[in-house]
Image (tube, rainbow, N blue to C red; front, side, top):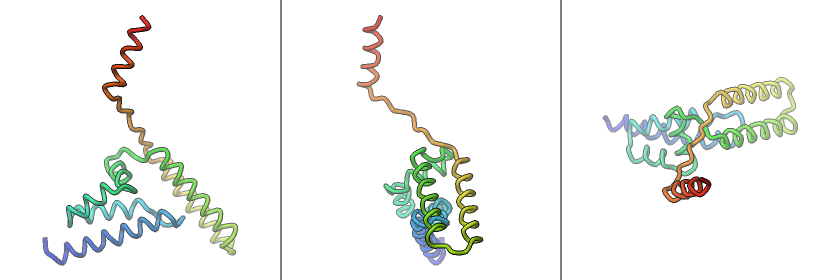
Amino acid sequence: MQRAVKITLIALGTLSVALGVLGMFLPVMPTTPFLLLAAICYERSSDRFHRWLLTNRWFGEYIRNYRDGRGMLLRQKICTLTLLWLTIALSVVFFVPLWWVRALLVAIAAGVTIHLVRINTYRPEKAFSIEESCHTKRLEFDRE
């Protein structure tokens, strides 16, 4: 890959991560598309940045689950929707004087809500350890 293309993709990926992080705190700015774009840019330009993004403790699991089609954890959906509606409500009530901007913010929040509700809800299977499995079998045996 040409050096200029690689540098451009890394810069675009880094900008996308920054915008994605901003999207976590700003109600009308999306997070997921920017983080997915960053993953694509890093995947094509830098193994190190790509690995960092996918193993990041804040959004690595989120990106992996979304890309693999598993969806979002229920707690992520609840947290996202709570923060979305809380910030929209605060903005509409205290900071936005124009009625049409208020209506636009509520419409955007409704659209984001519909999108999030339609995403698969990922429920990881509880992994039983060997000790738990043996303990369960022992309890079943004791009942007989």
